[in-house]
Image (cartoon, rainbow, N blue to C red; front, side, top):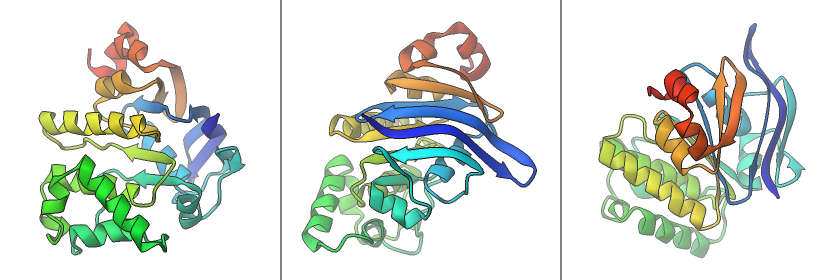
Length: 235
């Protein structure tokens, strides 16, 4: 079953046609990546799916039902976004950021359970619980951003450039965490600057340029495609 289905999606910024009639799907339990150059429309897709940017046409379905129009309704339906550059509440503590991620949940025990799940993924966050998030390292902030999204207990996780600005060792930690999250049953849509590694861990991938998909296929195959490597992956 498709966890996410997008058909003929269009997005405009004024007269700029940022996303031009793209269609794709993400099946339950898959990692699907969208790869392309800066300004190709990757983040616009993510913000549109999260309800922050309005589409100008197309169909989006979550688990077979039309996507709601408002961001908080989309979160309630089971989709959560980890935005580019984290966008944490920097003056709030790690614990307060996590609680903000669970703002729609009323069962205190489930909130505690989700927080424990995040600590299993990122043990360092337990040690930083009372620390202001703005004082964390870049890697710790990314761990917190992912955990904050997981606190809503989503079925579909959108990750927008999760390794941006991280050291190589932390990049691999994040990638391994994405695989762990998928192995626990979550569906993942990934936009990532480290295109080769993103495709390597993805079940399927899409190459985007100027708001249009140029090619799609199994992620590892795209990662090895000579034309794709030359044009987009620096190979």
